[in-house]
Image (cartoon, rainbow, N blue to C red):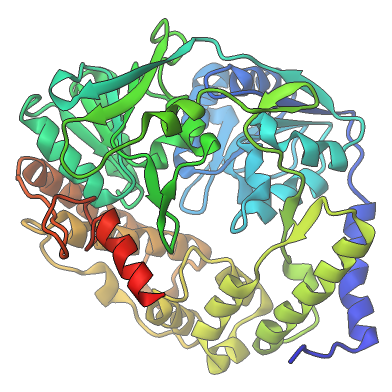
Length: 526
């Protein structure tokens, strides 16, 4: 049954939204730097930022913010450049600062990177809020041409700078596992797939195979990237984390799979997904050209060349520019002012009502260029804290938990413990004293690293809470990162394959059934 919302409450919710959208700060210039990967668009925007009296950069990943921070510090002087991420603060009030987008701050020139994240259902609201509300003299938006329709809707006077790829990208067909050359990145779409590839490749490249995947601790991810940059390893086995702004000397990208799990089934990669990953080949200044193909010779996947080749050729024209999709709307979610004046214990139901009103408002008044975010992840974290804790938390602390980097479905117990540590002063020392991780599997060490990352966030947001410190979280993260690195070295030389439970043939690692048996089971169930 649809929840009834009193007209007075409807007006109270709609008012701040209307006011925000009607009071977008006036900027002297709003510039969109749009083009494919390896086109120099971010470099051009950072040149403008570095030449301004002050500047702020925002990107989607801590690793990207760190990379920009290091580059600007070398260019402008370490004491003049800061870093702001969920886990780190270095000179956060410096004239120039590199941030994850959620933590962007006003400066003379603001650069928002990977701006196509505006359309991301989970994190897009941070990009939208920054784009629409952050005061600055100049706003520079960097990303894929795909997002241009939404940017035009938001800024009718938008200045567009289009960029072409600096190094050509060629499709080379299939390459056998045994013929892989140094400077190659091989792509699979699960940790198990990456590790299986690494084991297979280690036979031909003993000791010279690296790995990258999302669950890897940040320190180990940086170490693996550094090993590839230095030439210590020849081949990098990676998931699509490779597509998120990492700058590596990759000559060739080979796809071991052309299908990816979407939550219900394995489906072909969309051309834009292929493009984001494939574009990492042939980095300008490192290689004259990039090569993209499919891998053959492994026994558990059959990548389709036509799926990969489609990602090298944009199929649309958006305002006269080549694109893979036409993103016409951005995501907008609630902020703290939308729940101000209500006790945190009421926020779960209030956020749901906010979403209902906000959807109605944007549908009737904004012509479809704004979509409302799913508030359920925030609601889930608040409900995991529990009403007794919410009643004792300040609004500021409760809102911090609503935005926490925690999954309420998988980490509800941890959310509750952290909440009690703030509200009731419960102790958390057992979380940072995990014992000796020598000999731990990579999976177990990754779990500890994930916990350490959460505790790093927690100790920086709530200093002294739970009896643990940032130094405790840092030590745990370092310990887990070292353990992951040691375990990976061992696991890469192992030789294990997954087999289909239905027919016994080699399969995509991490799945119980091959595609044929999976479809047969689906037909029987239907």
